[in-house]
Length: 355
Image 1: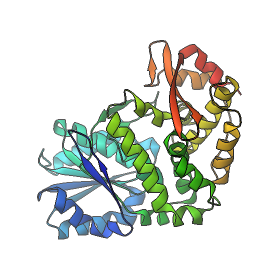
Image 2 (image 1 turned 90 degrees about the vertical axis):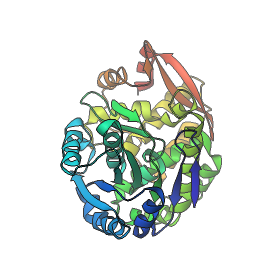
Image 3 (image 1 turned 180 degrees about the vertical axis):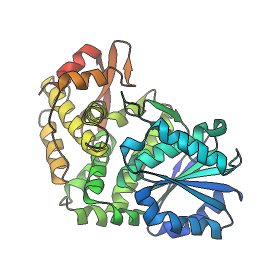
Image 4 (image 1 turned 135 degrees about the vertical axis):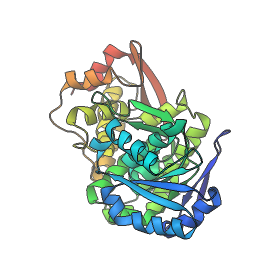
């Protein structure tokens, strides 16, 4: 399956194909001239797939080096970025060379940021191996790293030259890692794809059902992300719809400590919390919060977490990228399959954090 991300300046394709990891070299050869490539990955994904990808690239005529770092959100920071810069310099990487991100969302965000800033920008490709990365973070050109105060606070907009998704890589994900990706998938159904939502309602929520329907899940999710990114590449309008659940979710991730609550888990909790308050205010239809809660629970996502500290959460929200002066843009779902922006005074956001 192929989806075209038809951006005026940086068009590229998303390839979704089982077994495609073994054909990486041929795919890259169609996109890039012979050059040096640095494969950026983490230690876990690297141990599973780096050698396979490296050999495929070398067979296609590329000169390949591998940079890996300790897996986890805690590594997505400027310290790791600086180590990557030093590695690239030692490899003699120039502006004519490229980076390939091989891994989950942390790897993709960090590798994209490194590529977009090293020597003022070199080209890169995304090979996402987690469900979260395959349906969300590998597409759209957002790169970034975390600071102690906020998630993805330092970043760029930089589009890849292509995205290669092999659903077979999901078979090596841990159960929790696979399930957390469903937080983003459920979000896509809610904000823009009622057919996806209905398909999810028809699944039993088991790990087996996710893996058996992976191509459908990935295709629908990528198609929503693709359409929104093409319409609003730089996140000034409808792309904000993708933040449903994220405003509170990012605050949860930051206050819990990066890695303790996974991204998709935080999004699920954030969607439920925001919907509950928005529903009470008459901004979302009655009963929708229970539907969201039931869907998240079915797939094994958390619906709450402790300790819930309103003051700490609000402090993080005050630094959120969606905050503009004394107001913040939140996303609501007037009906399943549609989203809308709800701009509120920042102070009112405290009400959305009350249990």
